[in-house]
Image (cartoon, rainbow over all chains, first blue to last red; front, top):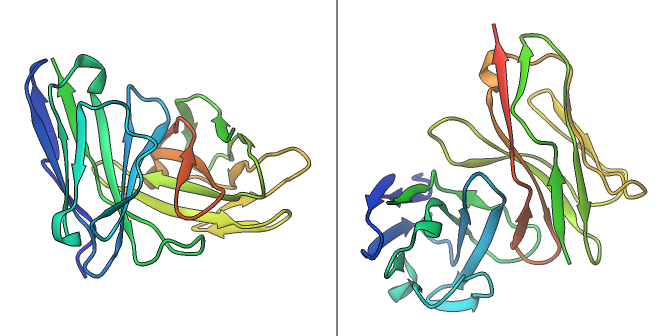
Length: 115
Length: 111
């Protein structure tokens, strides 16, 4: 069974450009989460999808970030325009259910560098 | 609010040394506690967990005990190997699958 897949694995862009990150969850997982780790600090929650709906987007830093999950399968996270402080590792995770006992599976992350 | 504090790294040990990585937390309610590990080039993997006070989570020789009185969940291993070199994250979950992580601790094990 394929795990959570993220691409690209690395992205280097200039300030002001646009970048789109993609996450393919494990097939059949309704719940999809985005997290990010900035500058070696804590990994912070960004948002949570249940199928195609945003269940919780309380961690989204500002309106330069747009997450979508059309059709309830893969998800994209677009940063437009990118700023220097957006550099970090963006992780995606999925789970079948959203309850406390559900196991969460993480992807290997996208390393974003904004120059 | 909810937060996790873990010891800063990097932690550098020789093979077969004893490992402790400290983790303390602040939480509303009764959190579940986790240790995740990220090996080079890979995603985060659940290492162990504990869901209530005094529970001990264990896996691959690693252990951590949920201490409510000290709000701690320290990670220990009696004899580390080079293959244990990774970044270790302590985390808590109060509800659903929304996790609050610490900043991570780099472990380097030398042969």
